[in-house]
Length: 199
Picture 1: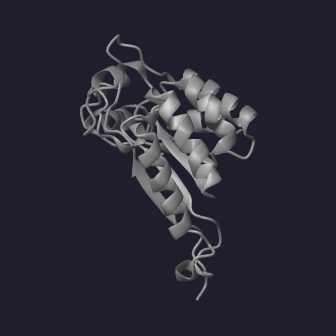
Picture 2: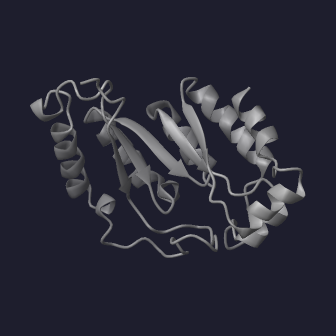
């Protein structure tokens, strides 16, 4: 049997988010005290045991995967809590995981801090236009949003910190951005932005 590329474990560490996207399940909530990553001992034990179970040395996985397992950290928005995220990243690296993260890009300083320790980042980009972001609700309580220029700058900074970092763009197609695609010649700015990201 030919080995699969990689086993990926998704861990939604929090449901809290600083944006209010109308189509999303994560809403403006404060982090819950019951979130596992807030308990250092429990978090350490979970990652350690998961690392042991998913280790390439475990006969269950022998020769089934071409690469070591990847822990994908998602939310909500994990970058809102830099301390907790930093701890999870360190523990996961020590346990032998490749790491990836899903982010809305609203905390660039936290992303820059962990960029050298992760292999992939997924940036949620549901619109490249300010009016689209406003209609979707892709902004914080003060109305601050991440524009396409901000995202391009962020990707350049992340690539400077980690030249091998893989970048992927996530988008939820919805009534706002689907309409924008048809009104702007079949796209809503994604091709131009992608060209900037990946050049």
